[in-house]
Image (cartoon, rainbow, N blue to C red; front, side, top):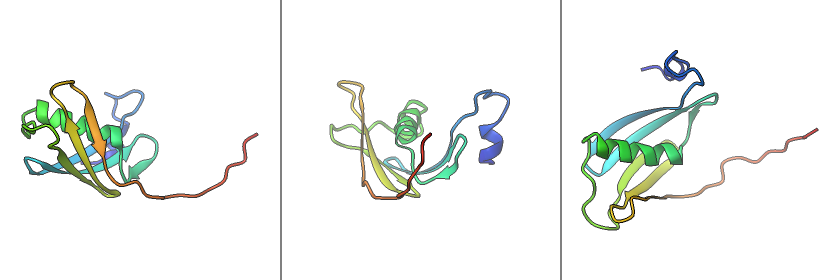
Length: 108
């Protein structure tokens, strides 16, 4: 599967982000991200949250039964834990935060 081809496919006139996913177990997924206009990235928090909800809704993985249980998603930049709480229908993400870039920009 080709990230650039999917990003700019005619079905997505404004282009789109693409996530490639492998189900490792009912509570463990692996994901790679192709960001619209940027290419491969280390992670995408919103995409990871959407992935877990979509995987559950599609029946690819079960919804964790207990409050506090989460789905682990491995990304190139590190793992994220995603919890979709049934009582309030909110999605919670946790994971490491690390320094990845320093730069300067001249704005005119």
